Image (cartoon, rainbow, N blue to C red; front, top):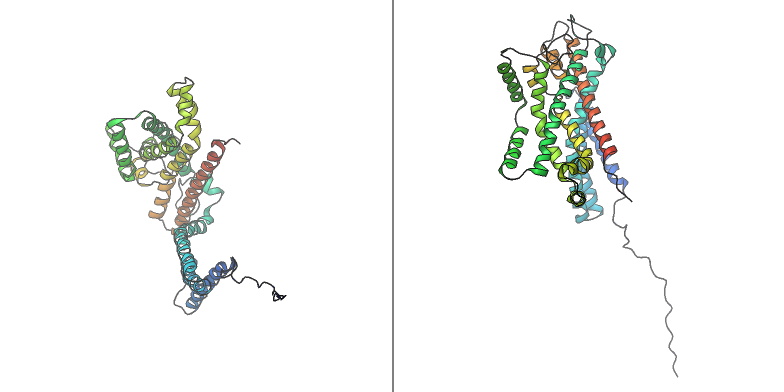
Length: 366
């Protein structure tokens, strides 16, 4: 009888190809990005010291540093991970570079406006007008009041018209009339702002028989021409997002169509509609050409929309920059402060739109 002996088994060796083998650690791309920024920034400093470039360009350093990071990240990934993961990282890096390119002008604009507008962003700027001011001092209270009144009146005109038009297009509109309204709204969306100002000026000059008419309500009408298509489009898209099941459930209970729109459709889409209205206000609050034509400009306070010229912030910025006096720096400081005030107002409107959208958005059940 023969006995067979089995060879002793050796302990299993650890598997070399695990899930994390050949993958760059998460901190490496960030480290390469910071290193690229430091390298490009050092080159800019050297060029500035050599007299080639007088000022250090932060925007240029960030852009060229990010572009260098795209190349370095691909080379390091290809050497460590292989060609396919490297190509994946390369495309991701290109998307990041595109985001940086889109973001840098905004950051540069905000930095420039804030740095130049802060010297006159004081109490006097918000409590005084430019009446009898030819040098330093003065403020933009008359322009701020005019902007708020004209934009508010334009909102009162545009929101009911735009919202009712959107309700008609979504809930009632059929056939040639609805298609014609949609076409006209698309055309109005692309008209130049100065055309709206010329329309308001010609309309009131003919109606009131005053060829040189200038008043705030005309500026509100000109802005409403620009606001209405934006309100119509945004409200129309929000109303289309309301599920048809909600309408059908209301109809099944015997609720009339108009009451279904008021009690079901509008409350469901009110958050998006409000956001669209705020965006429309932000779009027209910085318009200069139509207000310069129909509202005019003045250095004094005017609270009456229906009488005499009325100053607005965009026109205030333009006039301060275009009509500089002997002390040019004082005019430029007021212009930058007016631009900063406009930016703050627009940012506040967008913040209010986000808060309203969050508060009034439909609550999901458990």
